[in-house]
Length: 436
Image (cartoon, rainbow, N blue to C red; front, side):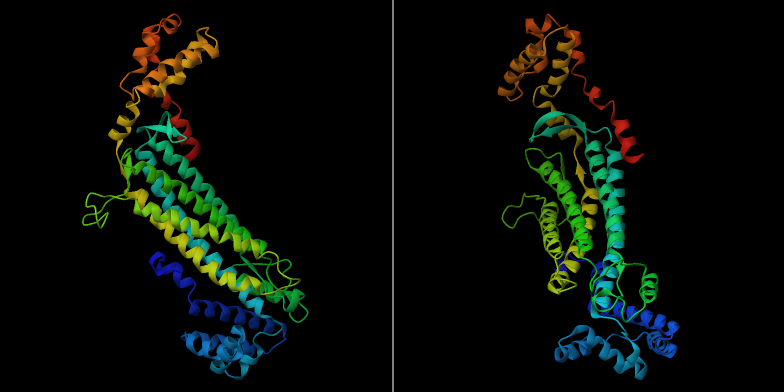
């Protein structure tokens, strides 16, 4: 985790003390249920909760010192708790194995991380919707292959982004449900030394569902699905970030990141205003996507368990969620403050001499009885003259002067095909589909 790209709430979720607190809750809830079943004295759970009620500080350094000797993190934790609670602590961890604690804790952390990320997505969706409605009919050129195609609106560009992130939200809801499972099934997952009702009790207390078959670990296909979902969200972040970066290029300059007072763009060139935030988002998206691959490779563990996944998840759990949290918040800020230039959009659209209306002329010629092949030829030969003049010539003027064209379409009919508003007649329909 890089502090530069971390926010406090998500980072706190992965701090050692937060982890140990979840460990204690799992152990105490399990002991509580074991007491109800008569497997251990009910006084054992009471002793644990009474100590916990004093809200003790988790001594991470002391636990780490014990682990330096035991070379086992869960044993180190249990040893430290026993030192604090006393004799009743010996009933902790009855019939359990370390993975019961570790995997259930990871499920809690990822579920809570998901809740933060879902709130982030809600903020982003709200910002995109606001700007989309603001520029619902702001005309701009659509581009395919980076080349002028036909007119769109800037609101439609943002509506597309909204729909994409709305799908991302749905995927994350599903991934959260899939990852939020609890395993308290003991060695190799057979419940030989612990009753399944203990798992059910712990799951209910922590907001999880029992894992149907946990072997000795929760199956890692769940985690692969989760981190793949984060990777897809990162891809959507980059898609919108790249759009902003392209629009900020000097030759385009239809939109740009907010440039705050006192901000500097370059150490050498005082005139620079660089898209540093969206460039940064592109880099962060690459990192988030990279965490999906080791999560996929974690699926194939040996037999009932091995720990080849463990070191991987110590990296990707915090790093992927912390980085995505930061990225979503940064993108929300970029969209919220994005500078948008409708006049430049119109100027860019006009600079190619009306070429953006070529399809309407093509279709009109076919409807007037000209074959599609001939219609394409007539429009293209005039369009290429405009293209090669770099927009100094106007397509409408050339078409009006082309006898083959005017034999099929009158000047008035041709002028009608150059109406910009025609392209936007279904904007309301699209907005209703996205936002309705």
